[in-house]
Image 1 (cartoon, rainbow, N blue to C red):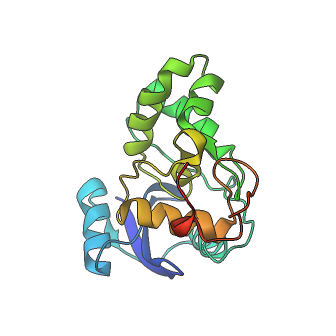
Image 2 (tube, rainbow, N blue to C red):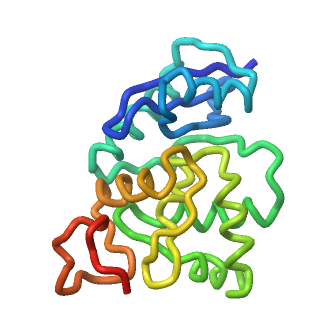
Image 3 (cartoon, rainbow, N blue to C red):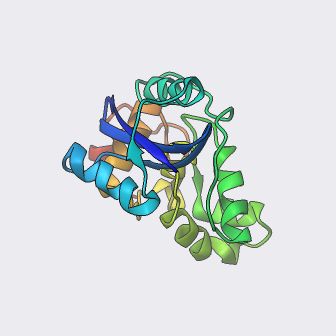
Length: 187
């Protein structure tokens, strides 16, 4: 039986679900904590519980990351459920993107062998069952354009997370590099 807990972060209450010591789902904040929990319960059938030490450590690392620390989440054991082999490869490439850095959908596709896979990469990331741990927010459109983010809050949440991490989508800072991403001129 899966279990879950809500936990506060700088972007709102997130949720994590686990079975034994393995994470089976996460959710970014919805409009209310109850809606965030409902999303995870619907997907996993989890019930509310106190986390074991390994899951508590994962929560603390996620909180640290969302406070701007360069927290490494690679120690967290996850069960991605019934995702296809292509999505597993996309998630592996995405997990290798360090905090504060981004890749484009095309970059991820190239690392999988063909730039034409870019749309499939986006579709796989849209089904990501473990956002934050699989950092799909670090994948952006061409030239750093902030496109499609299916997590709660959409592109606004993606923008907040990238700003917290100090990311510079599209490369190094330019004349407007010190401005928040939300007000930078579009290319």
